[in-house]
Amino acid sequence: MARPRKITDERLLAAAGVVISRLGPGFTLADVAREAEVAVGTVAQRFASKHGLLVAMSRTAVESTRHGMRTTAEEAGDPVAAVVDVLVGTFAPLDDPETAPNHLAQLAVDLADEELRGLLAELYAALEEGLVALLERAVREGRLRGAPPVPAAARILTAVADGTALHWSARPAGGLCDRMRADVGAVLAGWCHGSDAGAIEEGM
Image (cartoon, rainbow, N blue to C red; front, side, top):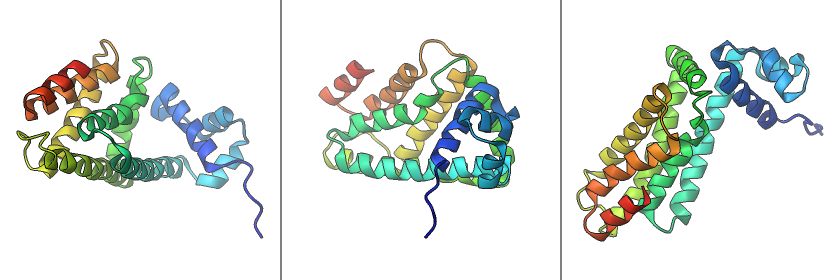
């Protein structure tokens, strides 16, 4: 029977996230090991390379997003409010103007790598699929009468959120979460009517 690992993948991946925030794509496995307080060999043995570590981080993010969206769809009281909360929560870890340039630099590296770019596409797909479930419920309840077809609405909202994050990262004024809530809320308010639109605007 295999012995349980004392040093979990989660611990190493969390350390990698902190290091990327601080150093950007120029980080090394040694930086991750130092943050996790383990030997460099432990990180190298677990992920083989820096690229392997980035792949593991991306795959974990995809699975976490899928699980989180399923849970939200099952438990959300107000589907329209849940759409805003999901998108704000997804990008909340980027809400720091000091580390935003490092995240942008790492994103450029990910986009230039075929495997990492593919995993990023999976992440967006998981986010959109989760939004579809919430938006379909909102449409059934008559909450978004002015919205385009649900798949298009999910794609638009994801693009707005992603664009807001990129724009804010380059020109950080105020907080990203506040900006995200306002921008996504403005789109949803335009698709609502009457009291629903007013409620969304009040929450922005």
